[in-house]
Each structure stands twice: as C-alpha cells, then as structure tokens.
Amino acid sequence: MIQTPDILICLGYIAGIVGVGLWVGLRKRKAVVASVSEDYFLAGKSLRWPMIGLALFATNISCIHLVSLAQSGFDTGLLNGNFEWMAAFTLILLALFFVPFYIRSGVPTLPVFLQKRYNQACRDWLTIISIVSAVIIHIAFSLLAGGIVLETLFGIDMYVSVTVIAVLVAVYTMVGGLKAVVVTESVQTIVLVAGAVVITWVSFSRLGNWSTLVETLQQNNALDKLSMLRPHGDSSGMPWYAVFLGYPVLGIWYWCADQTIVQRVLGARDENHARAGALFCGFIKILPVFIFVVPGLLAYALVQKGILDVSSVTSVDTNGTPVVNSKGIYTLMISQLLPTGLVGIVVAALLSGLMSQVAGALNSISTLVSYDLYKRFRPDAGDRRLVFLGRVSVLAALVFSIGLLPLLNSYESLFNGLNDVIAHIAPPITCVFLLGIFWGRASARAAQYTLWIGSALGVLVFTLNKVLPESWFGQTPFMMMAFYLLCVCLLIQVILSFVFPMVHTAESKSLFWRHPLDPLRAPGWKGIANYKLQAVLLLCVMIVLYILFG
Image (cartoon, rainbow, N blue to C red; front, side, top):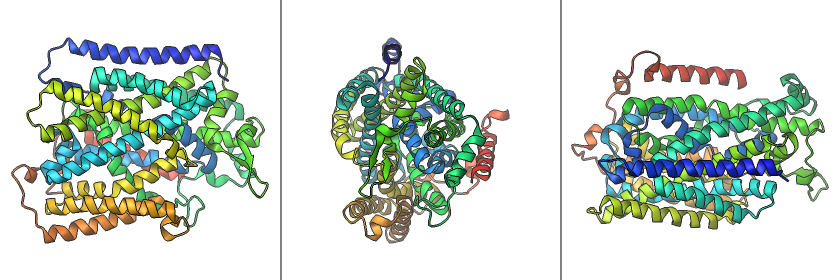
C-alpha cells in the first residue's frame, strides 16, 4: 500500500492542477474577447507551437499508455512501440497536408471541414462518430486504466476514485474551456514524462545495464522482444507488414481526423504555429518507447532475476502452468521498486495522463455538441447558450463513460482493446479525408455513402470478431482488418464518385491539393524553425531509429 507522504504528494498535485485550471478559466473571464464561444472552445485561436505540441502529446498519452505499454513491454517487448513511433509519420502528414486546409478554412471542428469539402450529411455523421469515439476511446478506457491503478495502490473502490477524478477534471474543463485544458496539459506532460523517466531509471539501476537485459532475454529465449518489426507468422499477430499497412489507417484518423486530437491544432494562432506544434509533438513521440515500453521489458528481466515479485498477480491455468496477469505489472513496479516520495511522483504522473486525456476529450465533446449538433438546428443560438450546452454535454459524457467501464474491463490487454476498437472505427473516416484532400473528383454523395457503409461494415466485422472468434473475422489481426476495411472503403468511394460526380462549390474547390508539391509552397519561418526542415529532420530520425531497432 502507498505511504502517507506519497498520498500527500498525489493530493497536492491534484489540488494544484485543478487550481491552475480554475485560475486560467477565471482569469480569462476578465479579458475582453471577440467571441465567447471561440475563446472557450478554441482558446481564442491564440495557441503557440510549444503549447500545441505538448497538448497534443498530453491528450494522446493517458494513464492507459503508461499502464498498458508497460504491460505490452512485459508480454511482447518493443513491438507495441510501433504505435508511438509510427505516429511521427502521421504527424508529418498532419503538418504538411492537413493543417493548411484546417487553418485557412477557419473551421471550429473537423465535421465543419467535411461539410465544406463534401456536404452536411458527412458533417452530421462525423460528429456522431467523433462523440462516440471520444467517450469510448479517450475517456472510458483512460478512466478504466486509472481506476485499476488507484484501486491497487490506494485500496479505494475503482468507481469511487474514477468518479472523484472525473468530477474534478470536469470542473476546470467546464470553467476554463480549451485554454484551461491546454495550459494544464502542458504542465501535466512535464510531470508525466518526469514520472516515467523516474521508474525507467530505477528499473535500469536495479537490473544493472543494457547488457544484463540482453543476457537475461537470451537466457530465456526472448531476444525477439528487442525487435519492433516481426516476421510473418509471428505469434503476436502483428508482423512488419501489418504495422506498415494497418497503422496508417488508425494513425491518420487518430492524428489527422479526430476532433479530440486536432482541436489543439485548430486553436493555433496561425498556420506556422499549427505546423510547428504538430512536428514538435512528432519529436516528443520518440520518448514513449524508451520511458513507457522499455520499463515493461525491464520488468520482465527483473522477474527472471527474482528482483520483482509477481506472485500476487500470478494464477494457474487449467494445465497447471503459472500465468502472470501482466495488466498490473506497472503497479507492482511502482510499489516494489520505488522508495517513498518517488512513489507519489510516479502516481502523480499517472494521474497527469488520466486527467489530461479526459480533459481534452471533454472539451472536444462540448465543442462538437455545441457547434455541430445544437447550432445545426439552432443557427441563431448565442455564444453563451453554446457554452452552456457544451458544459451540460461534459457531464453527460462522463456519466456514460463510467457506465462503460465493466464492459471494457473484459479486455485482457487494455492497449490492444483500445486499438481493436479504433481499427473498426477509423477506415471510412481515414478514406474520406484522404481522398477529400488528395483527389478533387471525390464527390459528396460518394463520401456520404462511404461513411455510412464503412461504419456499418466496421460494426458488423467487430461483432463477428467477438461472436465467432474461430472464424476468419476472429483470426485476422485487427491491424490487417483495418487495412482490408480501408481498401473496401476506398473502392466504394472511388466507384461512387464516378456514379455521382462531384459538383464543386466555390469553397470546396479550394480544399484539395491539385499538385503533390503544393503543400510545400508556403515559405514558413526562416532557419531551423522552418516546417520543411523540421519535417525532413523528423523523418530522418525515425528512419534511423527503425534501422537500429527493426
């Protein structure tokens, strides 16, 4: 159990974050703004690149990443680090190809962008999908991971601890809007990274060095855990081609077309800050493999050395073989490896991930409900009415998310469960965004039907996967299933674009690239801050990393 000093550190951290969020919100109220709703939902479009980059990272990294990436490191080694490093490539796509249209069109939400490029039906459908995915993926899964950790360490009922944290996050999110969310996320990112570095450093210190790790893995026939790219037929179900074919489907939706993530970019003060912020986040995404995944790999070695005791999470299967429930491995590392004081810092880091993820999703939900649902039917609604409806939607989303926890807890691996859900949601959205900005003939009716049919197929395949686990649907890895679904969606939209040709409006004509080099024509900032130079540097760094760890 956690000691009193650590409890005080955690309580002090929670109070501090809530205080900062409320201070930003109340201080902001005293300022004169042109639009109350724009200031609340988009931070008055005043965000600079460092804050955007940190906020993107904080919204992406939640408690579930710390817990589940450590679990995956324990089970499969560096393999799931692909979800972190491949994100850098999609952030380059966001910065180069998507950001210019988002900023120049001045859209408050991505569904509005789809309306400008396609039609109202596409906007309505994306709004619904975005709200549902924010509730399930960004809030419910994060609350579940946080609840498991807090229950194990503090002995407090999961639902009690999760509800208290959720209410506190909702308070400063409702008061301060996106500005409060982004400011607190920037602080939380620093705390989260610091906590992850602490447990990585302590684990390395207990093991000795990298050579000891390699030797231990070799002795246990587990050297493949050091490889991020696996051969065909690998037991993980994620060979190298599944990574390169399947991840872009998930990643483009998540980083380029998901409101919860992209809203930080929409709040940028200009196009250069938006691009630089996205690329800055791409550089930060290098870190999780070393500070989130590697600790799980170190934990595996520490167990083999007898330094880490996993008897409390070990059971015996029907064949009498001991099985480690690795879902709680991060909690064991905190409680057994860290001294008093450091435990409180790492738990504060876990809370940082939980609170930043939930806060970001809540703000995005409130934006979608206000702009894309309520204002859709009440176009004359005033700013203050929109903000009020946004705050009500925050409470509704939290209640529904907490109700989903028992269902989501059935996944053996929370991280794989999270990506399994994304794999069946993403394909049609990735399809209509990609064709929308790269192919001028992609038509509105075709996009509309692709979203409808693709989403229905995703639900059907997901259901068959769970109901018939021994069938082709159940045996196909979710990464490859995402790729297959994308291919079907691309085929549907291309064919229907010829059946229902696009009739462009004056606005939609300016929302797709006519030449592959067009995205690079903007001069950008001078020197090392130039987005072209930053994109090339990030690309080179990622290629080198994959050569070293492939």
